[in-house]
Image (cartoon, rainbow over all chains, first blue to last red; front, side, top):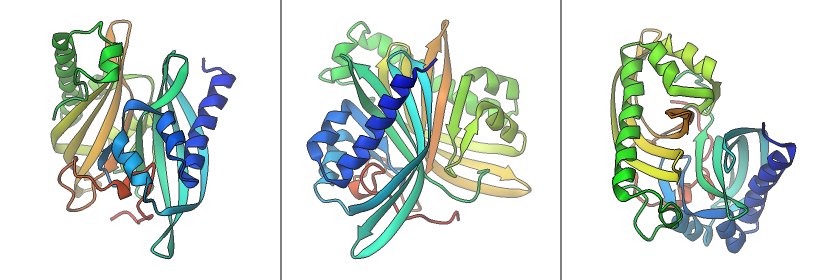
Length: 130
Length: 170
């Protein structure tokens, strides 16, 4: 139901956002996010596209990241959900910290281009029930 | 909380086939449907919960674990929803057949004789198929202690930009 081509394209786009964040390429991130984008961050707080881009101007440096267990869920021909686990290492005030979170991104096709409209992250904990 | 669809909003312009009355109506309908899932869960009406979830439904729970529809339905049998409060609804319209609804929930649950109380920021992606609206995807992110306002801005916590450090479940 989901073509291999589309699957590969969206995973590559997801990876390219992380790559752009790592090299602090504000315009590449801005292009990848749809107008009206918002996200629920790992702390449970919500952010608009403008807030995300603003935060990028002064980020803790991403030193490394790995993305795994990609899955795609088709909502419609022009709307897809990508889920994956992200492990992100950052240097915060000289200290290196790693976060592992389960993430979802909702992608929509607008005028022939796929852009992210919504993103949510949930830190992974041991308790798998509640 | 107001939905994200002021008149200058690009999605609104793109979706001008929907009037503001129709949009308001859809918003109220989906919020009622979202509430009804929790009501069904509380009265342990598993068939009603199942009927509200689309074929292929998946969820990322508050623990950061991935669940299929079957796993979610199975889990309902062991976790008792005692009470819940929903607030801060926001609607993100993707197209007339797909809507993302976000909100904050406070739940009181019982599992293996122990009571749990927590607050999380949720999203449900609703899709209309064959005239029926069902949830296709759901995700929960626990709100950290002392977090009250969903609109409070501290971009340093955004998942896309800066993740909070890994922490053990409390």
